[in-house]
Image (cartoon, rainbow, N blue to C red; front, side):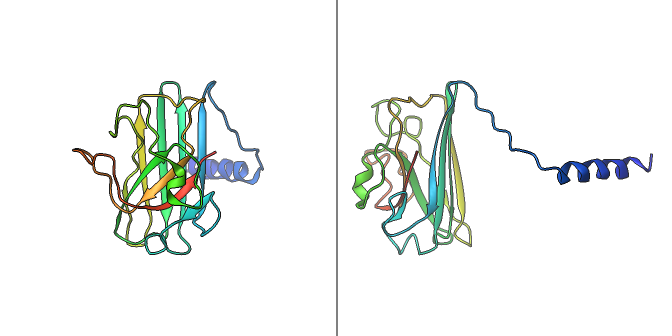
Length: 177
């Protein structure tokens, strides 16, 4: 059947020519928070605290979504330093003018700093300074106690020992809504 590809291409072309409204569905009880943009020097929606590690023009976006008993969080960055490790965590308060304004790490339970109890989105940037990370947890976000920011740190997260959960100074922050 030589004409099958021609018919398929014709159908696809016709479908693409139509304007359709985007379809979004959200399961009952789903929670999604997100934030991002160009890392500025003053706008606390997306703010840079260290311009050496988050140069002008750097951008970041973060999303945390809970569906049922599971949560998936993701971070995408561009324009950071190339071939460099950064730590990133969800925090309890919105970003502010000072790095500490975002408060401590968000924890599912006050059980301590572990990758299972906190959201760690460490990444290593590529040669252009871009990177991405995803974390999946088998617990839901609670509408009454949501993380309010994502902080990018200067170092990868220490995963064990007495310094577990630390990742160096705060480089940038995204307020989540």
